[in-house]
Every structure is written in structure tokens, then in C-alpha cells.
Image (cartoon, rainbow, N blue to C red; front, side):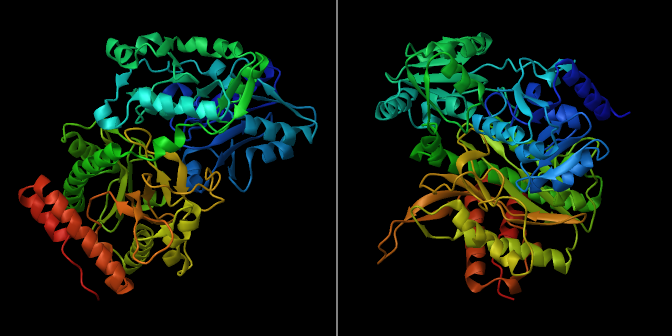
Length: 600
């Protein structure tokens, strides 16, 4: 019996002890985070799945794992089909599946600290239709059988200086207080870790690759705030920075404090808060007002200081990536390099900047067939040698005090095939179409998504992930609320207008299962555009990322003159910006790779 088969059996035994006929295991934490600490990696521990999004449902005689199109291949590599059914979302929701598989009279458990209230309502309704019941648990049954479950991180909080933040915490809290007054609310509960970090101008080390601290915050209508965080995380510098207007409490006191809002109106973002929070407030006599977290839009719209910081981060990060691209182009054809060794070398180049705080996510270092897995996670067991004739894809980024980067490049190891060049050039055409888009204020990312797909669609091709996601300012590499994706794409949420100051990725791709993957990713800053004679307020994009796009994979015959002009102008800009940061053979290589390409 495999380790994961044994764990599934142990969970079923535990469910029987807790008088449950099923349990739902999401990949999240008490803050509805996308990236979670090791202590909250219940889905990976139970199933072996290493992706960053998914849910499992365990019933007495069957079990299912729910994943979106990014993980269709990965889940089959990492999870046993003998134990688990693979179910695609959004085609089938967890609630709908439960409604079709739970037995009449079944008690299906869930942890109210790991699901939104909307999910609880949806699942409750689906189960009620078949005479089953959704039951909150006092003890998470996965935790009960996880003997060596890691403890939550005890990393210290750190001050995020105003020289990088661009606004003081007092100013941000005053704006939230004004918002509360407008909404006729007494307080707002912030559960999203990025929101708390942004509001208080602090950063942490509790989640791998994301500089946040496990905490909750309550902001009051007078501009004061209550921060709930483990005492051992506090430092004198952070206490002095927060000042008297931010009262600090033990994180364990947060749940009991929710009963103290009797007679008060408390705002909560229903999409970013777990069900346990509003339920506790209502049980204590408070009134929950479902409203969007008031920090979400200000956090997404980078101020001028944050924009300047990201440009500086992009410059040094681009130089590090360029050094790596030269290295891999020379070393990989010799043999001896692997997915892991290449990722380690890129991290080495980034750390050589002297200011890297962390990676922004575990690098997707993928050669050959692994490149066809959009969110592939390389491990000691899975790492492949990088061989001639393959495409090597590297999706990576860095965390710096002044910005968070995310960039993808593809390198041919040897001579690429005509098909590889065709597919790469079509992806490039889509990338350019999005980068050069001009659109009226109020346009959503969903409306722009087709621009990046059209050159692929024209060849009967597509890709099964979003085209772009928001990026934080020394925060999460995936930041809402805006994104560029099909409306039906998992996690898309309501259509969100793009606003000046937002930073989003531009990353169309193509994936041939079992053979190779292609993705070209730069980060874009939404900016206002003035058009002579125009009448509407228009927006466009500034491309922030600076690194060569592999010229050996480009078929100039497929590019229009305008597309070729964009590519040559981009490469001229890359060469001018990075040449002073490189020297000798590295600089010569950069200039050669950025030389103009003529029409075929």
C-alpha cells in the first residue's frame, strides 16, 4: 500500500470516528490564501498533488480531486488514479459533485475556517436536494491523522519602509476610516494577508515566496486598528512603526473577539473571508455587511513610488535573467544540466544582485514534456535532464523591497523544429497584440483576453489558462481583483475593469502534451493614453519586464511589419536598459540577441 493510499484509508477511519460520511479538503488556509504555509498543505499531504489550486472530496467508497485546466497533466503524474477520480472545474463544481454522489442522510464535514460562506451555502443547498447535510467540524480530521504536521511559521514581522510603500500606514487607515463612515459601518475585518501587510506597511515570512504574516486586522471607523498576530512575531521596530493607533493582540484572541461586536455593523469581504468569521460575528449579535475589502483596489493601483520601484526591480531582475539565458544557451547543449540545476543557477544570478529578498514563487523549470504542464513543479524525483532538441521553459520571479517580478522565457536547446517556431511565433503575436492594446476606461481583462489567443485560434489552437494576473508590490505574485482571462476561467470572478496603476502579466502560451510547452510572459503597467482627436478616456500598457525574447524561435514570415517593429523596438529598449548592468561577453551576447530582425 502506498503512503497516499494509506493516508486516504486513515482519513476514512477518522471520519467514521467523527461520525462523518465525507469531508472536503481545499487547498487554502484561514485567510483564503492561494499560497499557503506548510502547516496548511493538507491537500498535498493527503493526495501527493503539488499544484497551487485544487480541492479533494472523500466519501466512504469514492474520492475525487478537483483541478482546473492548468493541472490536467500534473495531477495524473502526482496522484493515483486507483484512489482518486480526476474532476475538471469549472465544468463540475465541488458542490454539484457532492449533490450527485453523497448518499441520502449523509453527513459531509467541512472546516468553517477553510471555506467561504458562499461555498457553504452552495454546498448546503446541493446536499439538501439529496437529503444530505453539510456539517462544520470542531477538529479538522486531516489534522487529526497528520502526525508530523509542521507548526505555523514563527518568522518575525518587518517594517516595509515608506520609501518603498509610497504612503504611510496612517494615511491608508484614514482612507479606510472614511470609507467606513460612507458605508455606515463601525469596523471592517481584514482576513487577507496581503491586505493587512499593505495597510500596515509590514511584511512577514510565514508563507513561502510571499512576504506576509499570519494575522488578522480590524480597522475601526476612527482610524485605529487591532492587529491579531502571534506575539513572538513582533519586534521593537515594528511596534514603534505601528504606534499607539494600532493595538496588538495575540492571534489566538481573534476568534473570541468576534463575539464583541454586538449591536455593531461590521464589513467583511465575503470572497476573502472564511465562513467562520461572519458566523461568529452574527452569533455575538453583530450585523455583517458584505462589502469588498476596501484595500483591494488601492493595493492593486500602484502609486508613483511603487511604479518607480517596480521599474527598478525589473531592471536588475532582467539583467539577472539575461545572464542566465546566456548561460543556459551555452551550457545546456553540452549536457549535464537538469531542471533543478538550471533553476538553482537562475536563483544564483538573482541573489548576486545583493538585494533579492526571496523568489516570488518556485521556478517552473521545465524541459521537453514537462513544459507542456503549465504549472509544473520540479522536484528531486521529477527533475529531467535538459537535452538537445527540446524546448526549455523557465517561468520565475523575484521578491525585492521595491517590487515583485514574474517572467517566462523559452530557450531551444539546439535547433527548433518548424512546428516549434510556428507555435512560438503565434504565441508572440498574441503577446504583442495584448501589449499594444489601447482600450477605453471600463474595459475588463475578459474583454482583452481574445487578443492574445486569436493567432492561435486561427490555427485551431488554444491554451487552458488565463492570459494575465495581477501582481503585487513586494507582495503576492498573484494579486486580484483584475485579471486577463476568459470569463469562465476558474478564479476569474466578476468582470473587473482595468485601472491605471494596475500591474498585470501578459502570458499567452501553447502546450503540446508529452512534447513541449511555450509561454512568453512580461509584466504590464496599465497607464492612461492620450490620443489626438480622441473623445474617450483611453488606457494602454507599459511593458515593464526587460529580457530578450529568443530570436531562434521566431519565424519572421509570420509577423506583420507592425509586429516586427514592436519586437525590434522592445529589444532595442532591453539592450539600452541592460547593457550598463552587464559587461564583457555577457554584454556582447545581449546586444547580439537584441539586434534588429528583418522581414522574411
